[in-house]
Structure formats: structure tokens, C-alpha cells
Image (cartoon, rainbow over all chains, first blue to last red; front, side):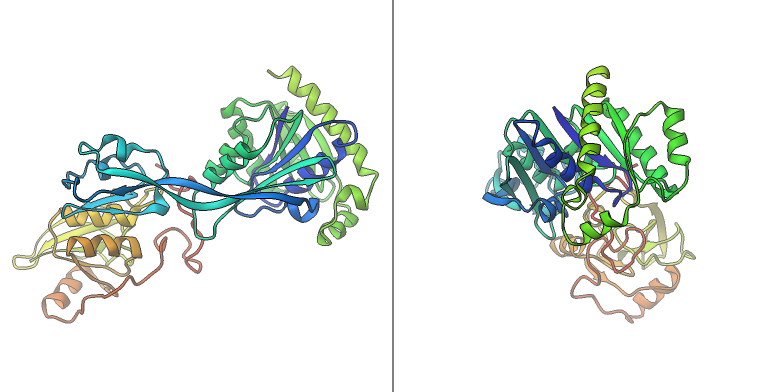
Length: 284
Length: 139
């Protein structure tokens, strides 16, 4: 089963929940893997501290024009949805950082004047901690194509009984790429106006993707009741609540796993997993 | 001579727009006759590549020079390939800018005046927008 941990608002506790849920399940489950798909700023590895066993670059294809064949017709610039190609005075200008590698330019060029060349946009790593398989990716500085690296993280990962995906925050392209093939999504929020506003956006997203989901409320006792009332009105299950416990913040600041600092929380995460399994089965 | 000026409105009394790629309008002027057309910039709300699009459209319209507040690196590259002169640091009204241009008070700009994404919201240090895929400005 693939579970994506997402949120609307950033900083709600996705990584805390992803990492601690993954390690809490190791004892009772034979194959668990954790994928850190927040490729712009991966941080699961800070807490999991995996031993990295392999690393490889992520490459995307971008067009390159054979000027001898090019007639300057401009069809490539017209067809490019992302303005990655401009044709001025019959000269083709390519802007690789904007290219989404869709292949339309080379497909539609009437002269067959394009070749597709690889360029690096990031890297993917595979690691292990205890019996956990760990994968993460990082987008190179200055690059824009998060979805390509996120896709590569998933391609690199193996088949596992349980896959936990730490998603980027928000509701845009990188998040869609991270969550779209999940069997279940846990939306992490905090009981504040920003938390609620962005949770509502995230709920819209998972409903549009038609994936079963539930909510986890982090720092549940430090804000207002609006998030709870919202979930009640919307018929959304709350499957995990973590209080605003100072020990959690202290452990986090040391890069320490929550369940190692406060072992009593392991049971909370295991119970959360039980609820995920039940809800995931009943919400087809 | 046919020139273009990035503008906040469609006519000569409009203020010059400090942005090029995401300018609200372009005013195309025939400097000899002062005949002009104000065009809404269709790339202003593009998810990405606004500078490239705007520059390409202006180049295709046959203007010889573009007057604007700022021009980013991608647009600058397109203008260069098209042989279109770029003048940055332009402000005041469109009419004032044309008069200054006609009296030779402007020098052509040799390089982009700002980094990418200058025209996208906030302008807080010029580094906020990642541009593509974040869905802020998709129409």
C-alpha cells in the first residue's frame, strides 16, 4: 500500500509524520520503504540518517536543433506550450530550463531538424536504515523541473508492502507528481487559520485526484477548533493527533527521531497505520 | 521608425511599465508620425516564459527598438537574436519617453537589467517565483 503524507500549508509536520510512521512500522512489517519526494528541500535523511548505498543523476531530454535542416518555419516555437523555444529571424533559440521534455517540437518539426539530448537536473539516492529502504532525490540548484526528479525517485524505489511518500507542501505540480499514484493520502495540518485555509485547498486536490484520505492534526492543542469543525462538517476522519509537546521540538532541533526521544509515541503511529488500513480498504 | 514601449495603459499618457515580459500593455509607435497602437500583453499572466513570448511577439511586429523599465536575460537574448535594440531605465509617460528617445537622450542597453522573474509578484529580492508549475498565474 502506498501512503502519501501531504499538506496544504508547509511546516505542518509531514516529515515528522513520514519518518516516524515509517520506523514505527518496521517491527511488525517485513517490507517498508520511505520515499522523500520533497526534492527541492529533502529533509527525511536528517532524521533517518540512512546509509547511502547508491546515487545517480536524474536527466531530462531537451531539444537541440540541426541548423542545416532548419528552415526557420517557427512551428516548434508555436507548438511549445512552455515558451522554451523562440524563433526569431529564422534562428531557433532554445531555453532548456523551461523545457518540460514533452517532445512536441521534435515530433512536429517538418524537417526532422531536432535531436533530443540529455541534461542533468538533479540526483536520486538509495539508502538503508535498519530494515527500512530509503529513497530521496534532490533538484539541482537553479533548476525548475521538480516533477522529473520526483518521478525518478519513484522509479528508483522497489516494490514494498508499505511505501510511505513524504510529499512537498502545497497543491501544485510537484505535489501532484508525488501523490498521484498513492492508495491513501494523509493530510497534515495545524489548528490555525493558515492551517485550515491551506488544508481546504489540499482537500480539494485529493478529491480531484479521487484518492481516499484522512487528516492528521499536529500541535493539536495550540490553536483553535476550526479545523476540527471543518473536518466534522466535511465528514473527514482525523486519524492522528500530536500535541504541542516541547520534547518533540527539542528532539527535532537535535535531528533526532521523535519515537526515539519519546518512545510512547510509537503506539500512536501504529494506531494511525491501523486506521489508514481500515479507511483505505473502505474508501475505494 | 517603429518602436515599442512597455506601458501600464494603452495610450500615450499612460505611465511606462517598469517590466517588459509582464508589462500590462505595449504601445507601438511610428515615431515619425506619432501614430500609435496600444496592445494588451497576452503574456502578462503566463505561467512561465513571459519574457521570451513578449520579446518574440514584439520582434515579429517589426519594431526596431523597445523602451522599458527593465528587461530580463531570456527576453534580452531573444531581442539580441532578432536585432532589436533594448533601452532600459525608461520611466515617465509613454509620450515623454518617445520625446526623449527622439531627441537622442537614451543609450541602448548592453545587457539585461534584472534577473529572471523580475515581473512576477512581490519583487522581494527578486527570488520568490519558481515560475513553472506552481500554478500562481495559470489563466
